[in-house]
Image (tube, rainbow, N blue to C red; front, side):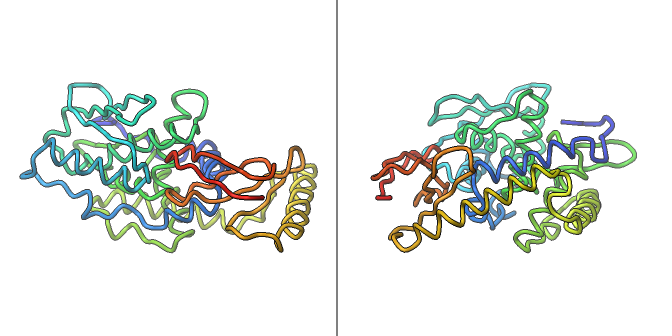
Length: 299
């Protein structure tokens, strides 16, 4: 959390941000990402100075848990003097302890932004998705929170003028704007109407410019000859397996193959929509790693 000091600008973490978006799709699947089409609403995380501090923080935490579809997760929020904006104790659950900087006692409108990041930590922990190293893992968390609809609060917490500055999260304002723009282009959502910070609007505009530039680039330009051949082969194998299995499907599952391992069946969890993939082996019984729901189907 920058508070009064200089705020870094530009795109120093852009490669890691792009890797984080790719990792989200690989772990969640395209269908699961599409279930996050609605962002956290400003009214659901609004926090005025007349609200009770602890009851209000718990209310916002519950809203974040609901948004990330963590039905059996319970957050206990406290405040203490610390250097960072917030901290969460990642354990087996279902209870998770979140500590917020004492500064939020008097800056309550930014509590939602801090909790958006910390609950994203819990979500990724339950998914088993992480990057090596603290820096890259925090960038993954910021990117996931923003791409899945809660991180616009982190960008809106950015304020800068001639006398002071404030920024939450590890991404620069322009990088937050870039991820938000990627999300906007996917879902047709305009988060800028929710901003209360003029600097956030400017950063979002810069991020959108870069995101639109990405849209104009041809696919697989950096993959090389071998990568393009492998991609074409994997798509061919997936089409062949899906065609053979399509006539027998009675539940909404699909078959996938990457050319290096066994054919796998994929189906959505009815509780949290997380897609579950297991090898084809007759009757399948699996437990959702996110919400713990047990699912069964015949393949």
